[in-house]
Image 1 (tube, rainbow, N blue to C red):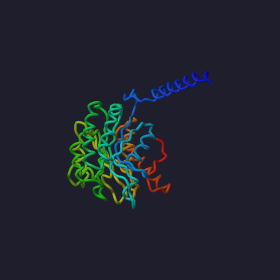
Image 2: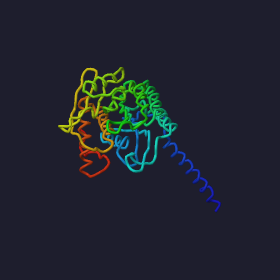
Image 3: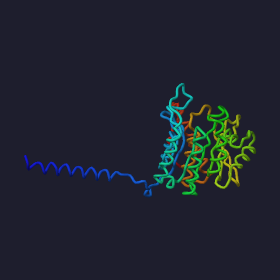
Image 4: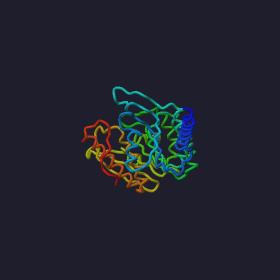
Length: 304
């Protein structure tokens, strides 16, 4: 019996050392160690549905991109259902998410940032501070902002005061903006009716950082049942026309912005990226109808 005691002690010491080795093996350093994060996507998220990060993340990943998703709100589903649970992410949590990205050095490792639905002015102010710090680390990193405010049919989805925060704090930090016509009017504080007014308004948002504005649902032609997307830069404007679909599923704008970002990171020109993103959004709307689904489905088409 006595001869077994050293074996028992030795065995216990061995496993204690092994456990320490395992802890060291899986301990994570704060340094990024060259890890590539392609996109940081900051927008809404739902348990059921295809809006915000819930559609943007799979859309980006189908292009082979690594994505970090930061939620601004977390809901059971979109509010157009009879019931909806959840709400805005508490501000200390949200700021902690952004701080953690900096502590992991992921903000400097990222190739692009996408901003979508923010919900509140507090989120906009926090993001503006965070983006300024990111710009210091990575001045050339593209920042693509979809200023989700509302649309012509529904009006504002959010506090109208958020438009002012977008205009004064966030838009000047963007490489590109993807508003619809209603949102562009809110950013410029003016009603937009004619093509010339839309182009002038978009161009007024260009600046030292902001190189382009893509206006979705810019105009529509009732006789041809089509809609136009305006892409405006300092030197040119080009228009893409696509079929108009009645009652499209929620999330097509979020999908468009994600797809546009992926195409640009893949090396497409702005005009090519806009055209390809528009086409894929259309294919996804049609795929959703073909499958008989209520929520937006990604089309099976391979990336071009």
